[in-house]
Image (cartoon, rainbow, N blue to C red; front, side, top):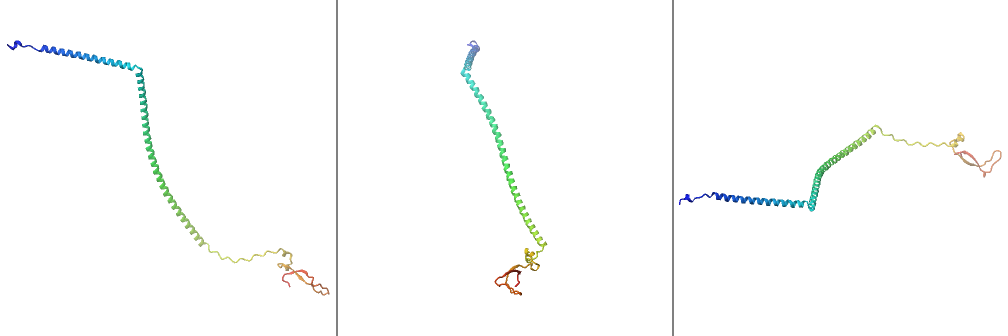
Length: 208
């Protein structure tokens, strides 16, 4: 037999199979899409129901409050960190200031001690000069003023005048009067006095 008599073209059968497979694939794709849409709708319905429920609202409110509290605490934490940073900076500045003041005080103390030593030396030097000046003045005074003469023997004290001298006669002035006992003697006219009857008379001291 001639091959040309029994030959046939397989193209129509293959194209039919391909179209059938493509149609089946489309059907499955549409079915899957429908299932996906139904699933999404069911999920959306469930979410809507839960979202409108009281528990869900309370949960959302609590979540919002928690979020607000978290934001507030975060803000406070940020402020506290800023304050801490400023405090640290101030602490550093204060420490530096204290160190500078301590150095200044040490320097002032050293200078004060140095000035005190200088003043003490100056005072000592001035005292030495004063002592030397005093010695020089004493030496000049001793050279200028001659030594004093030896004092003479003191004169006898003056005799205090006796107030009774003014009442005495001129011859008796300066002489003390003392009572004397004189016996009676025989008178030329024959009268006499007994020797046992003395009389008192005033005479100059030293007369016998």
